Image (tube, rainbow, N blue to C red; front, side, top):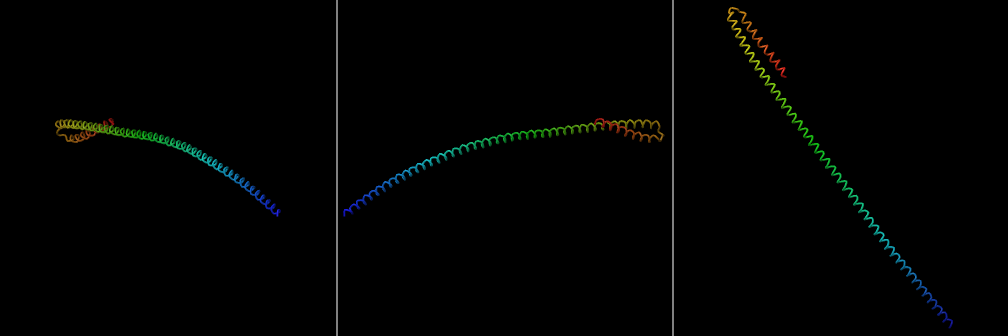
Length: 189
């Protein structure tokens, strides 16, 4: 039976060797796995850091661009407002000057109309005065003719042709002053 004991000892040695090898392999696998896990954790942390830094730089870039864009927009709006304000002021000035010109023309037109009206009334008054003078002269001439006719009639009472001459003289007296008055009025115009 010593043979049996040797086999059992060999088997127990082999089992121990397998056990040791298994524990060594397990430890190696465990240490490799833990190293891999540690490496994975490090990689994740570095990836997270790089993502965070990339996001932060992107936010900064966006903020800078937004600030620049808003500044440009504000400047453009301010310039547009200034231009509109100056254009509005210029337009108001032009409207005011045009109104003044129109008002001046209206006033000048009114003044000219008043002058023309004054001249017309003055001419009318002059014409009336001329007509009155002519009428006075005509009446004076008529009276003189009548006196002359009366004197002639007194001298030549029996003649019948004298009354016909009176009528002709009266007609001639009326026509002559009318022509003179018309000529005077034409000269004054």
